[in-house]
Length: 434
Length: 141
Image 1 (cartoon, chains in turn yellow, brown):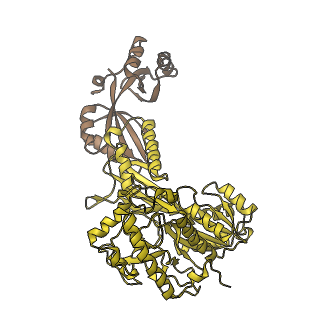
Image 2: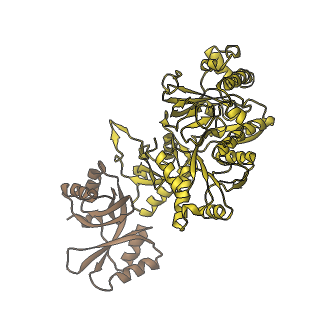
Image 3: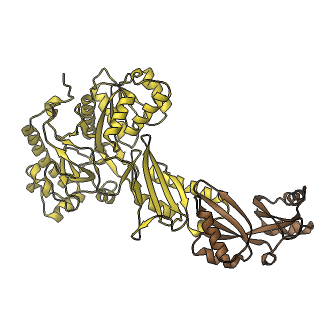
């Protein structure tokens, strides 16, 4: 028997979904116009008023929002309600200088948790299940998002947060966890550790995993499924739109259903901003249809993917998005954390290094390696090895503070970073993720 | 009166040292003493050359290079000769960061090179205890 969390909406006829979207977008644009002066100015600049938006077809008349807008409007500039009506803040992992903070009313939390509940049920979750959440808890949306959905479904929730693999495994085995929620690389690591400890895949009670927050491949899926003896489901989301659960996989494991009653998706040409027809690869843009506190319209995710409207055998009628196939900016996701080369450059300059550096990212045994090669500056050079190593350590620590994850720093001689046509190649990503 | 050591930043990879040595020999300089400190990714080549100012300028175009004052103490090339030198430095509370040695041109003549926290004091106490030290002038052969 097929399971849905909210069958009436998850399997609604397309006309019904469109009707809901049309109704919500008219209200939402009015809400933003009345309450978010930042976006109202953008609309005015484009000569659009709420009267121009009569259905989702009119969304394309609206201006885009980008991460730059979020930084400029930090922290309250895109707030759509009074602060006293908000109940939660979440924030993105590492960003340059200013972080992105997102606000939630109780209504926003509810709809977000409905989305993650749908994902859990789509992965086979029922109130009989024990859900082990080892996404980070805190400002990161991973932990709180899946935690809330697990409660909604009525699962017994293990709020483990990330790290401490020994303890994760002990709880998993002793308390018979059935659904695992974490990043795919951590799932792979848990699988390896279990094997090292002599456990066979059939020794655990897990039946499914819901993995997201970083790019992963079909090969990695197969490896995780084999090592843990589970079915592995992808989940997608971003803090700007709410968090994980904007889209999720069903048992078909062939694209992620976007929760279209809450989020309207478009694919655009990242260069021109032109809306592209379904089935075309382009940048994913989300419009939040009913969030109150952080109602982003036409937010550019920078994720490159494809939308698929072919009906799914699972019975869900919501459009499916492909796994992101790349980025339209230079952001990297390393160990689940967003990293921009510009952040690294800022730290180097602040610490007195030249901005000649190279980032090398690789995936070894399903875990990301993160190395930064930095040219030593003349005034930093010393005949004392201990002093140079101290410098290296202090740079590593400054980078860890800025990025939220620790790279390995390698100091190299001046003028040794490879330059092609005079321009240094900043990032070498050896992971085959797309 | 201490002597000048040149320190050169080299990558820890095949070919790095031979390139540096070739540049030094190309300049007609004689390496009197050398040592290498190594880390995972890089190393520091420390050399005493006959004409440090000229070599430093010459290599500076291509290499990250720095000058450091070190103390070169003369000792006999025999068992037990190092002990009194170290005892004098220890007595004066001088800390040795690193050291290496080379033999001199005369029979039984050796030199030990010290990188210390205070080269001036080190040289003074050594000389006061009858231990002679080299100056850059002595190195010009």
